[in-house]
Amino acid sequence: MTNYPSPHDSWGYGQTGQPGYGKPFQRPFSHPESQPPAFSPVPMPRGYTPGGQPDPRAGLKSKRKAQRNTGLRFAALYVAAIWLVYIINLVLFDGNLLYFGIQPLDPDSLLCIFTSPLLHGSLEHIISNTVPGAIFAFLVGYSGKRVFWEVTAFVVFIGGIGTWLFGGVGTNHIGASGLVYGWLAYLLVRGFFNRSGSQIFLGITLGFLYSGLVWGMLPGTPGVSWQAHLFGAVGGVVGAMIITSDDPPELAAKRERRQLEKQGGR
Image (cartoon, rainbow, N blue to C red; front, side, top):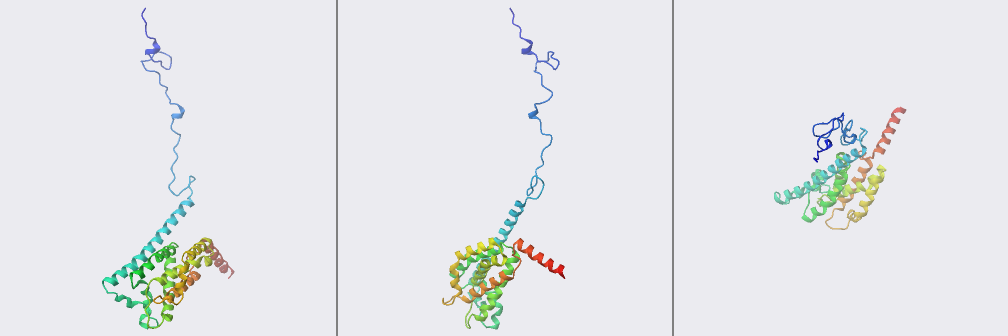
């Protein structure tokens, strides 16, 4: 008896159930699960929510990054400036640039209030001002370029004039420690004038970490310009009282409302 293969083994079946040509019948459409979606979602650009609105978290992150970069630039500028002047003075001028320090009550030395912060008499002197100065320059610069330059101007001018008036005739005052004390004083007290909890917390933390610097504002240590420290700190406090460019957004908005109310009442 001959065993013939079944038609089902060698032939396929068409749509009408008739024998095909050796291949199983393929449906004219795929399974629904394998179908591509009716539309593909359009990816939103970075910084936007799925609803197409700006993401406030992305904006805050970008702002903090810009503030951090600004602070780092000012810290680097401070360190580079004092060390460059120190090397130039040592190598090219044999230390004679120290003459441009503040010499109290000498009219020819009055403009040296702008040069004395860049001058240092020894390696130990400049090293002692490098690290704290870079930290405070970063923290002040973190609030913005305008804040940094305004605070620095108050510290240099008030600290320099105070040292020139009360530093003692026959002395020469050099070094960036007046800047260091001024920046620190500003960071310590600005939160109370700005009514900012975060700034107050930062000030308390810095006060705890650098509380030992308060002794540098008192007389008694030979060779230390306590006048530059004291009046530099006074300049930082005055800057915190006057400067408004470092105000938190809430305080700035409140001040603007008051100004509008005054204008409306006229």
